[in-house]
Image (cartoon, rainbow over all chains, first blue to last red):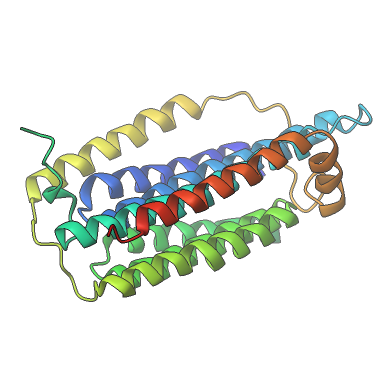
Length: 110
Length: 166
């Protein structure tokens, strides 16, 4: 499989996430689009790790493929921690202004 | 065209289509369910790339834990129907145009990469559980332990933020 197919797929998913962050006004949906962007990056990291696996297979005891996948694992860990704190912030936001619309969050503007 | 290419194309269509449905659907619950479909298709990509540990962790952590947390918060807030009050079509058009041009720039920049090797499908032992476990608990044992501290601080932070102030 060509690496360009994976690059194109990850870029399309990442751009869908960016457009979703820009056009949605619901704070939870913005958060979900950020999760989609993280997943696009994870997919591209795994694809690159499988691309470089064959070049390091000759040199023994060096496994760059597992290094990249450990990196993806840590991205997932940080995403899980981020989601818990972010959803707590959204719940507190809903408790204060009774809405999750980010257009109402303009108190710092003036 | 072999079976792996067909599987890749099918999974790509599934993931991109359900990501678009996630972005465009009005109901937040439907949007979350479409995002779960995206995560399952990305797990299918991981299986195709022989990253079996990451496929299982992706299903357990993302589709299992994080999305249930999102669903729980949405149902707690009772955000059932389409309650996006402000519909700014001009802003939406600008966002779509800028996102599309960003996609064009990124694609044209990354499409002329020099490929060293083909991406290995269904082979390679870098993603198997025993290899990843050996790497995680020998070379990366300190970041692994630090991530537990990160989880503890995230948990304390979520409790402190979500607590009703008396």
